[in-house]
Length: 356
Image (tube, rainbow, N blue to C red; front, side, top):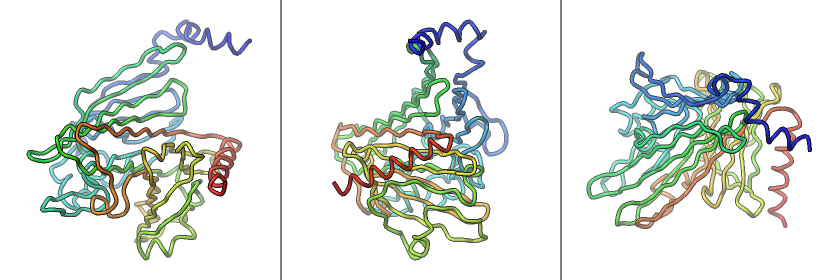
């Protein structure tokens, strides 16, 4: 009965204690004014625990994620920067990929650059550098929850070619350890289109350090190349960074409990902290893991995707004219030894369900 009373009065009590809810949470548009980031616009989301700048000029992707002031994500050497002319040419993406908490790959291609039927598809696609249109930001009371919402639309289109629209909504609640991304991808053209997507979710220091490990309820794992085959046994744990160590990439089929729900988690036992990514395999069937143990490029990425290593040249899906595909992805911060143990137990249950 006491719990019910607290829930009913939460909004009222907070409003009595605060001059403005902005002292606790909210969203504010900012624009960087220095260096290569000059002109980059963001919607800075702060829910009291999690802070995420969503880049309005880059697909509403999160530049970083911080929890209680501590960084959880990877920012690559190019650093924060706006959209550049070389972003969508061949392998030139390596000069502009920031990493960030997540960058969205697709919609025409993921992984390496390739030419198919005379059309050039750049590394990791074009949508990641597409500016958002029809951007909306809001922070409002939804019952007893103070909800923060950002939305926008990105279009990948060409004359006589594809016309794909990605509508993204990002939501979180004051005091929550979660932030949710919902994407609606619509084929607004009259021809079927190959649809590729990959959500490149990147963990970095100080969450990521020697000893940081993964919890993955996996059905199977396939290494991409010789470097990955050599690292199969140690793929779920970070070692001390080594100068020039080659990257390792693996492809997973994840386990689920029959409803499609699955997850992957990056766990720092020393800090008793984990970053968990949740999604549904009916929407996003596979996951790629990127492990970089090189000095100065020290990162681990979990990448829910619908493609194999070959991107557009391999296994994809066909989106019919005027059809829509929906993806939902949740970033969840898990804190405390017992909460991490619950993730391990959940992973074991999902793996055991395979044998039933």
